[in-house]
Length: 202
Image 1 (cartoon, rainbow, N blue to C red):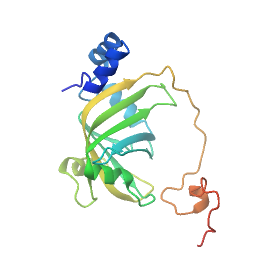
Image 2 (cartoon, one colour; image 1 turned 90 degrees about the horizontal axis):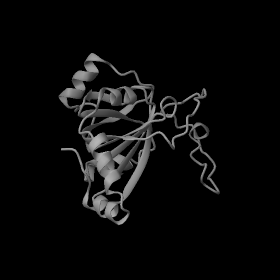
Image 3 (cartoon, rainbow, N blue to C red; image 1 turned 180 degrees about the vertical axis):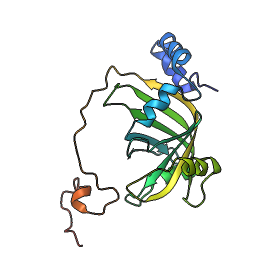
Image 4 (cartoon, helix red, strand yellow; image 1 turned 90 degrees about the vertical axis):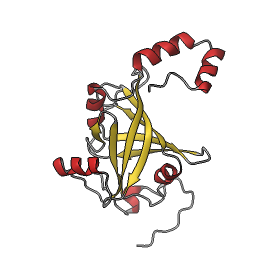
């Protein structure tokens, strides 16, 4: 069922007198599955943002990166993406383990400057215990990755809708050597925000 506004949304819409605008958006833009153009946008993205929260509502927002097509469209109601080797904290997966609700945002900054919101429920699986739909997809269309996959996340879509392009900059992509899964501190820049970083010990 397509969302036509949470109680909180409706309350604020009344306070700020935006009910007409909001209804128009819900009626025209909100979908409970992906359209062909949404699928096309997802398949060319090399980045997305993931919003999750734990059982108490504490939030986290994290980016994910990969070569175009790293987010798989299993069907018009199901997405999947690999969790590549990272810092080992697993903040997003920890939240998903407590609270499966999540939001994804894709922003097509190199082409249309259109964004796409996808909200739904997620579950994560080890690479040896994949659901049959994902396993069958990977058997028929193997995904070539430059980093180790630690697990997979599968999302069942509740709603999908546009983020309009009017405030999104059009960017130009530059060449950068990406060292997937590296522990090299210079490549990672992981001391960037530390005022007095400890010396690196090989």
